Length: 470
Image 1 (cartoon, rainbow, N blue to C red):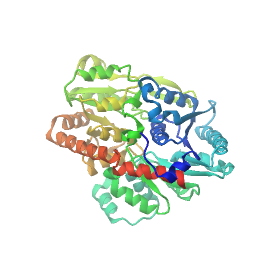
Image 2: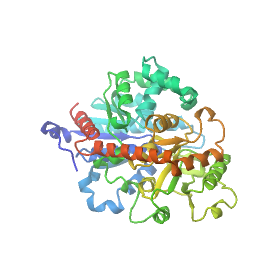
Image 3: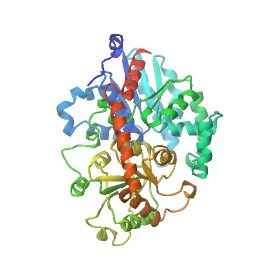
Image 4: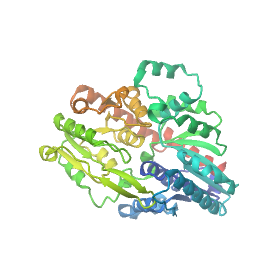
């Protein structure tokens, strides 16, 4: 259902085209696909510029069970521009991305000839690859999408430029070695990236998949630190009415995944879901400890085991798989109590299932937001980049989960005993039940915020109005 904008805004809707420029990895492009559907629902043409194989996957999400209501949901306003950029075995990733950026800008130039204003919404990681080619256009505005939390962005910014903030300093002092540094998370090049971002002359505004009910203070601090740049926070995207039924985006609902059949047979809040996202690969030794921890916990679980892989061709998504070995006899010993899935699984549907009572996760931002939006507490086991910051939000700020292992001991393999303890705490103690109650309360606040008339929904309307009038 489209939002009622002012008459002045409506006059400009057909004069604007939006070009979505994702980072070509699934976890990143999924969020911009949500945003594309939100904007398209406002009767604005949206072009999704991505590698052909990725676009093919996204097209499938608009099929199947959604056919009866496509026109009402704005999907007819989404256009897929397939970018054909092939890589060679000897080519570095940076060289490939440079050529991808050049192709993106050429496509945007073609789109700009058919509109009075082209609005480019790009993943912030694409700045390095599109900046040199934007001179081809004059009638465009760029908005950076940041696929992480306001807390992560602000904390990283403070570690690279001088910002006076006594409250933040107090948190850092209180947490000591548990507070992540950019060196321990993003690596030594983060300062260079932040400097490039701050100096980038084409940025007309920033968007984050968050909301004030979750990160009000950090959003305000981030906006103050970048006072000359508009900032919008109106997530979780998957909960906004314009982004469609949050479960349907996972895939075709006509075919039920086998793991949902397993969940259907379990008691309410009795199963812990275990997944580490699409880009995290656990070493074999860690997989063994995780398996033993789940087995020793004696709790029911659903574990999505991602095979380790090596990316060969980003365009054709060719991968070389190395089979993950579980402990001998593990699956036989946990049969009926635990289920292992070695393929894709519908994460939102799993988290939204009544039987799911906890989520053992790396705390990627997508997974964190989805868990909160479904009212599921978390056992946090971060690996790298922004995940340790989100772990602090989950365990220290929101208090909707437990920590599996100390970040100060991140170089060690997390032992089975620590995993067992975290699962038992989350799934079978008063402390775990309190985290569940808090996350349900937080989910309800967010549902109100993203609904029509809510704070996050109004911020979304503000963004739509801004890009169609400025």
